[in-house]
Length: 200
Image 1 (cartoon, helix red, strand yellow):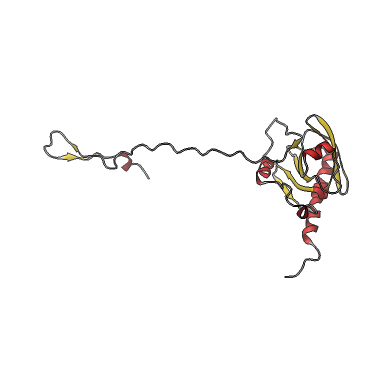
Image 2 (image 1 turned 45 degrees about the vertical axis):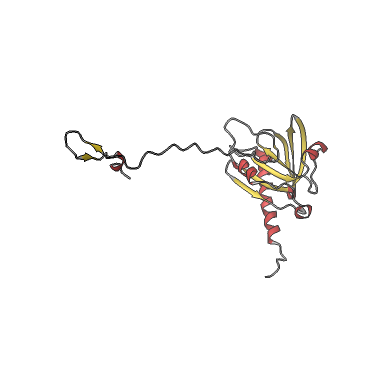
């Protein structure tokens, strides 16, 4: 098998990150249209990420932000974007290189993309976006209820208790006993079940 010296995989990811740049540039100029809103997951350890020490301590591997109602001063550069968000009532300014973005999703459509961040494999597992988180991201926002300014990394689902099956009651005999028809001597009649006449 020949070696891919061109690295089409990296070129494709760069091109798709251009989609993020285009979308965010439009939002910075015109605002968000309709029901669109964006979940952006990024690697907080990637080169060029700027955030407060408080947030970096809380999110040492990755972080997901939501751009919908509660954000301000969105500016987009050639290879990064900056945005203001409030976390627990405290305003923060984030500088996020596009190469640090691991996932971009618009649950209103729905539409989503995932990326590999440079050096991710060498650093080891970093709490990638789980299937549960992806499913939550792709759900439309409830009408009239704004999403929070941030979405914390997904917690493992709570174990669900298995319901014990209901106790089985003794089943009625499949064939009822014959009934003696009064006035006919020894002749007997059979009970005819109604379900024999129902359409199957």
